[in-house]
Length: 156
Image 1 (cartoon, one colour):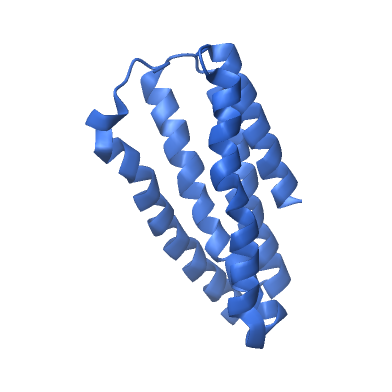
Image 2 (cartoon, helix red, strand yellow; image 1 turned 180 degrees about the vertical axis):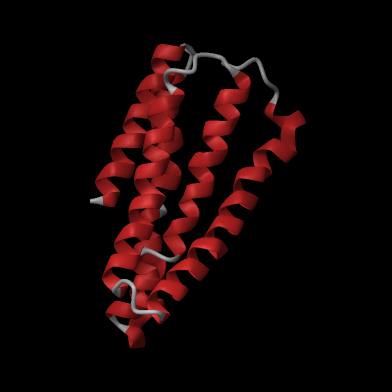
């Protein structure tokens, strides 16, 4: 609403960030595998760098979003980049379950994804509480700052 854009008429724009995340996930995984095969970095470094990219990158994009006002191109570009960079989670924490406990990786993945799913219902409730009936840039800035803070906390 704030961008005066009907999201239903922009299904392609809504899907493209996830295509970017898919492509970036494959790209960063291949780079990480190459670096590990050549013993350029340790597994721990690969995981930490991938997690940092996947969490701090989107945090920076979300904070930047609060400054672009209603610039449609900048907003869409930053959202695209934020979601694309999340492709690093597959080389970071998702595969880390295998590093930690190969025999229980499925169970660990279920536990961590279950805990992460809590945000699936808390996020819309929080956004609704902050913006319901008050769709202003100031209110959306609060949403972006909270989201960015959670990304950074997750990276740590």
